[in-house]
Amino acid sequence: MFGLEKLKGQMKNGHENLVIIGGNSNAVLVSEIAELLGKPSADVLVGRFPEGEIQVQIRENVRGKDVFIVESICNSPNDYLMELLILIDAAKRASAKRVTAVLPFFGYARQDRKDRPRVPITAKLVANLLTKAGADRILTMDLHAGQIQGFFDIPVDHLYSINVLGDYFRKKGLKNLVVVSPDVGGIKMARAYASILECPLAIVDKRRENASEIHVMNIIGEVEGHNILIVDDLISTAGSLVEAVRALKQAGGLDIYAGIVHPVLAGSAIERIKKSEIKELVVTNTIPLTPEKQLDKIKQLSVALLLAEAIFRIHKNQSVSSLFSQVGVEA
Image (cartoon, rainbow, N blue to C red; front, side):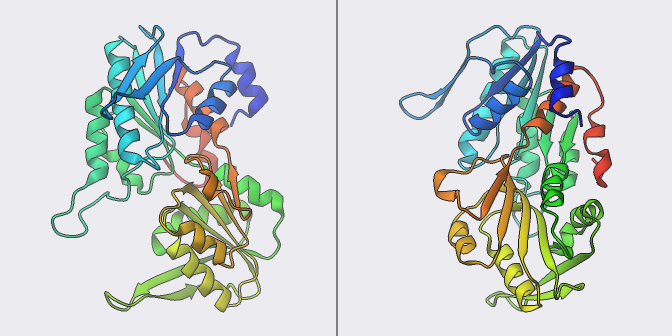
């Protein structure tokens, strides 16, 4: 990665054709990105008509410009997805040269396949909507399923926040640490964290006995007498995380931390986290934390620098892959 000073130095080379547009979903992150790029976000009206329809107007010239629209499909995902689609349409109709949809959090990603009869593949539907609206490129972070990139017929840059979270835990200097994947599907991510933190790997094997009974937790690997870091891409209701923490404690785990990229934190998640034995939950600001979700045991890290670097590299037609090639995962 460039780092802050190098990024500022690179930006001096001229970026008058770069335009940052932010929706309403994550205004603080948009401001951080714009500040890092040394360019204020565009003057845009994103409001509502009296009956609730979304009203959009780009209040500055974007003709021939390289436009990046930043919107997280979170919290009120239906509203913010619609905002993004309308903003893309507005930019295309204003003759923008290229429109990149920047999605720090790609909503609807959990519905990525037909795993039961008569269910949709909503991630594919959203990909189609973004493409049909006029997006020329997608920039996103830590997709719930990597194959979603293949749902698009336009270029997709898929970033990982492992450097941000990994650096935080490396600086904490936790001794006798074990990285734990909360399920078999997260082994690849957990292995990458274990590699950069130079520690062993364990897995929580979740099994449901039947349709009405709770999960039985089996631990694969040695956790007794170890500090533990659980890593995952998102936390929704926190049910699985709290179950994993309970099982790891029963197996002899010491202090338990979690590094999770996207803090959806829906339903009773906050109450569950409050009552759990988790020592610290570290998340990123791909999704903003509303006041009621700001607990002492929740630490939020910014991914603004990572996104700003990626935006700059795309604008300058430079490689984006170097931002994640060093972390042991592939785009």
